[in-house]
Length: 125
Figure 1 (cartoon, helix red, strand yellow):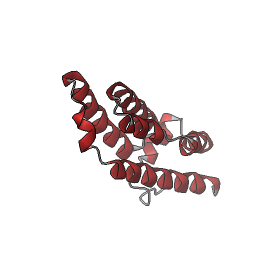
Figure 2: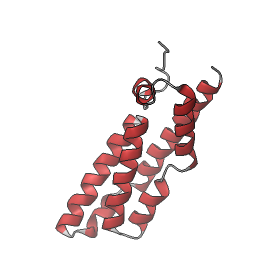
Figure 3: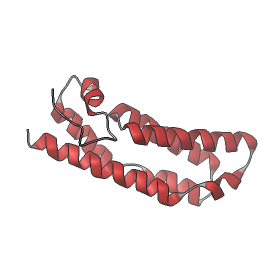
């Protein structure tokens, strides 16, 4: 079994299990994420103060993150989804005043950086 402890925010063993331990396939899927992590969808919804779009964007990223076993991003976007959904249900757009866009950018940046490291590691195999 490989040691993936240098990648703490991705559950690589789980991700590989989802693709029958095919590292090339997992690397290709991760590469697709790197090319379009969908951060811009969440940030755009926040900027436009669009609760419907914010819920949908967070939900979409949560699903992508879950399918790729990007554990930290999955948990983070799940939190955002609940926050936006609760605000939508209450008709309270003031939630956008509580959103830390720097934190969103940081989570995405750290995830993309780590995913790129995993892809590079798989290329060396």
